[in-house]
Image 1 (tube, rainbow, N blue to C red):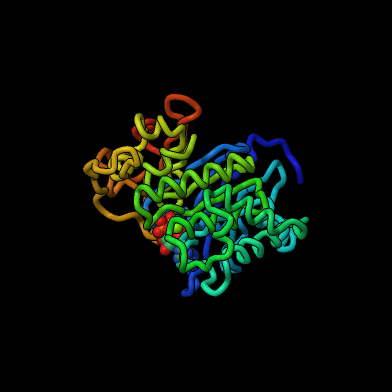
Image 2 (cartoon, rainbow, N blue to C red):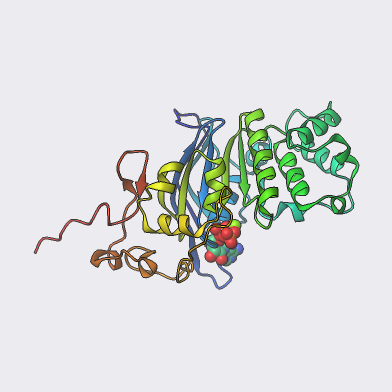
Length: 329
Ligand SMILES: Nc1ncnc2c1ncn2[C@@H]1O[C@H](COP(=O)(O)OP(=O)(O)OP(=O)(O)O)[C@@H](O)[C@H]1O
Ligand SMILES: [Mg+2]
């Protein structure tokens, strides 16, 4: 099915429910909507457990049979959700690819880097000839020398292995690249090298990038726009400069204060008191209210909607900007 679209990747009302071991339904992702243009870099940010990886895995069709995924996901206007296992497999890697969370530690220790990238290249449609050249080209794209192809993972540093993981994800030239916390556990200088590799890979292939991080500094370094997730929902979305300098949601503001900046690594960081909600634990009102320094009367009882703030480009799910209408007596 083809329809008009605004982006290369269009996600509308994405909803993920998981049947837990005890037979309970856990609502992990709710009503997630965003759009990323070709060559654009979009960030998904939030604390641990807010549903970032679940969102990416649902886009890849990699959640198991226990998960129910609703909503719409389009790549270049073509709906991919519910298109059948064969179709999902065909698109995976050649149209939409992922650098998995912890990818640099998941390379096969007994297979050379070159063979691992070549195997990744063969996952895409129309591959076959020129695989060796493609391996060398993609290594160069992520800033590694061709001779790295002959090495084993243990001979490389963490940053080099992460760049190999990026090379494996882009070797089939996907339209959409998802990168799940690609710089976590790396020091600041190596982080910058990995982010440059990611940017170069996307610039060269024209892929739409969705970069996931819990670190606003990393997202701010790379992305044009971002969505802030909390408890499985988007609570604010907008341009990076707006999120960094004029955040509308108190959670975004606290996240900015809690994130190191690549440009100012020595800055003192604040922490966000309390813990995010656990899936399956129902709450009335706004999910962030128990931790929110700005909460007021309606926050504990009414769930806010995601609505435009100053301009249509910035949206926030917060009663501070759209207080609920007074109920008639
Ligand atoms: N298979 C599963 N069974 C039960 N709960 C799950 C499962 N997968 C994820 N969850 C829960 O869903 C929530 C979202 O998890 P997810 O991995 O998407 O978070 P995340 O934002 O990627 O976190 P992190 O920053 O730690 O990677 C978490 O509370 C997690 O415990
Ligand atoms: Mg994750």
